[in-house]
Amino acid sequence: YDGYFTQKRSASGALGLHPLQKMTAAMRMLTYGIAADGADEYIRSAEATNLESCKKFVIKVCEVFGERYLRSPNEEDIARLLAIGEERGFPGMLGSIDCMHWGWKNCPKKWHGMFKGHVSEPTMILEAVASQDLWIWHAYFGLPGSLNDINVLQRSPVFTKLAEGQTPPVNYSINGHQYTMGYYLADGIYPRWATFVKSIPAPDTRKHKTFAKRQEGARKDVERAFGVLQSRFAIVRGPAKGWKRKEIGDVMKACVIMHNMIVEEERQTGRQSCTFEAM
Image 1 (cartoon, rainbow, N blue to C red):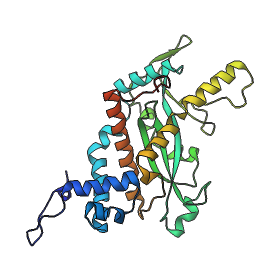
Image 2 (image 1 turned 135 degrees about the horizontal axis):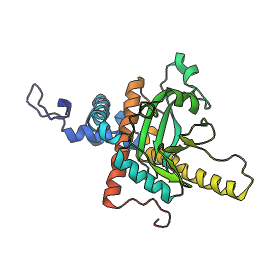
Image 3 (image 1 turned 45 degrees about the horizontal axis):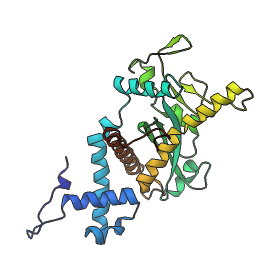
Image 4 (image 1 turned 30 degrees about the horizontal axis):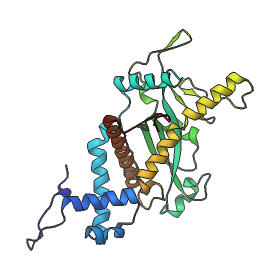
């Protein structure tokens, strides 16, 4: 897919770096969060080469695998998500939605006011929708950290296809009533839309307390997805060291794609369990 990841000869006829060396350097930077010069002795490649390898690697991951692993749920996916949601007591649930902040160490000084939010350092925001198996169905990244979840939602394309009538049909029943639009579990800051189901603040009855407990527990799916993403790819756990927003966005997008690859592989091999009883 890219001539950069092919072994070539120099002008003197000596063989250059093997493609596996370049990809290993990129993967070590992504998974361990090490600096470019942290893999030079192990990989036997220069710092500049490691940086270039990482940049080109994440770009190609996005180009080649983005369409499959960052797709919106198709009819088969929706049927599986609805079955899981009904089993958990939430018929019609397609996942849970929330935002995560990623620090930006090398944010230009003139942008600090725009990218500083509730924390003292500049950050960028990842809005994500995740299901119980930790698959991230929607990833919208790059907005300044000064925005809150509502501001991000207003700019997000998460409901674009729904508004245009391009989403697959969703059919389910609750208390004898038929519904054709799925929903996401969300926290209290999100607006009162039909596509969001939020907890009940200060529940005072047994029924309300039970619902709030179940909703708040199921809503943690997206929080778990954020935690697993950061544990698998340490580069998104620490502050981003890039200078350009697009390059940082490519890194985040590639990490989400590879995270979904792992989720798919674990699901197919039966090594993934979504129940605490099995654990």
